[in-house]
Image 1 (cartoon, rainbow, N blue to C red):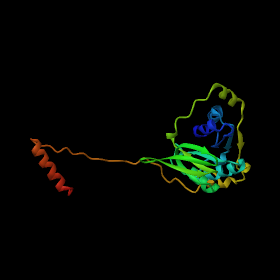
Image 2: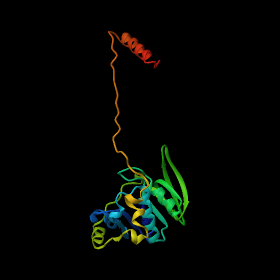
Image 3: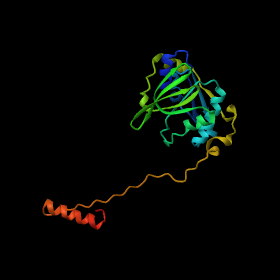
Image 4: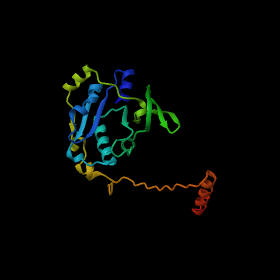
Length: 221
């Protein structure tokens, strides 16, 4: 959202449409982008969307984006906080046939191109991509701004657009758990075990010799 608002700061005629998927979405939470400055909120909200994996989520979002139409730039988060898969954005770009740049920490729009500073392990890359395109945004872009009172009051008067699978032209079998391509067989926290043995001696020299013997017995030296 902050990435979209920064673009709108420089191009005030930009229209920001927020798209979210889920069930029983808390209105005060999902309407926060409207309070921050978004123009429109579309919710894909139906029990049929429950249990969606990355593929089913991307399928539903892609269908909704096609229905909205005329998107110059699609912005996604880098990954969700639950599974940390980071696959939906890339999957969307494939389904929509758009170029994709991931892990953006800065986005500049000029003419019909986006210049993206993309985070890498030892710094960042600068990539230029033609629009329309899809960009996933990293937290290095900065904290989202606070909503002003005027925006909060305006958001209270706005109602989201709610779509079900049929509204976006997909079958219930294509989304949610029914449309998912992956299945979780087991969820667990890896167990790490370690053993520690203190090697001593009457003197530092003796302790060093004892350590060397132990390492040799273990065939580590």
